[in-house]
Length: 180
Image 1 (cartoon, rainbow, N blue to C red):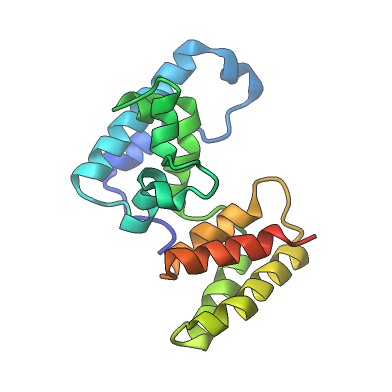
Image 2: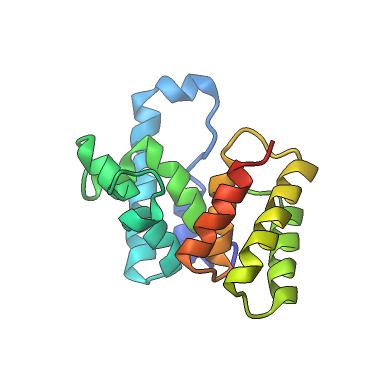
């Protein structure tokens, strides 16, 4: 469940969104207005057809999924900072979440594949499997030199996408966070 299927209209909107704009564009209000409108249109369409997997929506809307969020969801953080409703989807900082909704965790494909295979090989995941699974995620983090973006949060998302319970995904996140 990495990428979600898009309609032709959604693909056209996505083509107008650059998730990593070059620096001159970062200061151009017209650029951000155009990107914001495309992101808003895309989100409206995705919401209307319920295309975003529920667990990815919860990552954004459920306070329990925001580790360290002080009781606020990620959407709640936007609201606290004065951005609410559809304006959230236009905000440049929302692009990170839109990218996750569309493509899943921001990890290299071999890492995602190895983690998914490990879970599949384990079968039914029990509480005694979480420590070894966390150690495996830490090993993948080191082996692939994952730095920059928070790999712990990306493994948290991956664990959720793989069907692990919230507390299990949090444990995987904590394990990766401890990687040196």
